[in-house]
Image (cartoon, rainbow, N blue to C red; front, side):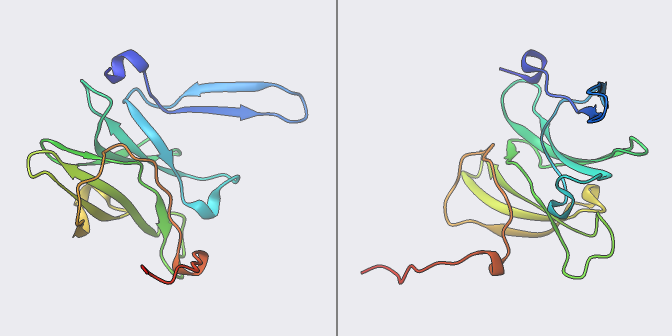
Length: 162
């Protein structure tokens, strides 16, 4: 099941709530999935999206593309041979001054090494590669859905193992 079969591409739908008219436009020909934007822009106009690059021969994702919806320019970071990522949320930097001032985070599974890691990329310069790579204690499935939550958004009453 490759992307040629299921056809994931970037689209834009503009809804005119006064007239009920809808305008649909394909933005790019690349096979991209799991579009994410800066969460502070949810429900508002946004310029940048961070999208998983669909592997040509399977339902796997072998890179991240930052797409500029104004200029239609894109930059891509590829994970490497046999390495596949997951949905990649964008988290604004503390004190961010612009929409793309932050980080993109993904879990990447390396099939040959039989391990996974968390990669952190600069949202403005995806092509530069990871700012940080954190090896996880266990391999996880690639293609996982994800979101970002800061420490102030997480509450736990868990007291540990008995």
